[in-house]
Image (cartoon, rainbow, N blue to C red; front, side, top):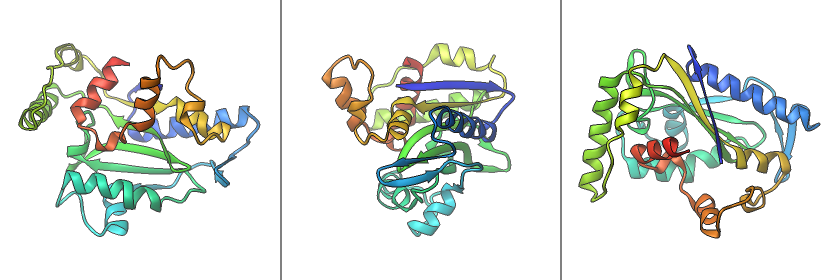
Length: 232
């Protein structure tokens, strides 16, 4: 289950701040104050949350620069095996400024065409949110979608052109948006290590398995991510 919101006139920086405020508010309402304990680790939720760019993280912990030598498989493997395990479990971590190839729905960073304004938020080793400065340039969005579809065709996959989304994007104001994993946030607040224990009324066992075994959004094709976001 995901909670999504958008804020007109905002970018991913304001959305990250919204998320800090939301998590702190919920923790305080539950009597946790500005900290909580998860899997034996005390997590300090006080603001501001530590941030690191994707480039900084990969250069420091994986020894290469994903902006100048992007390799999708290597990027995904190192994210799981090197980057995420390096995070300080006693503090939330915001990893931001993804390679443009990893953010089909995000606006490019001003003056940095290889970087997209996308951020992911981790707490206690769990990815809880994926934030963007939303792309609202229809020409740029069409260019990205066509490149993604061509790549999917080369991989033997099919894709449906998101016509309604493309019609709407031209009317969308500059804004920031986020998808926050409600189940993962509940896991943190309840100190529960098993996501099965916090899913409310799962439709079927297969639905539970899908959520439990799903790959990180980092490793999904970005167009597939779009379908997930639209179908919520």
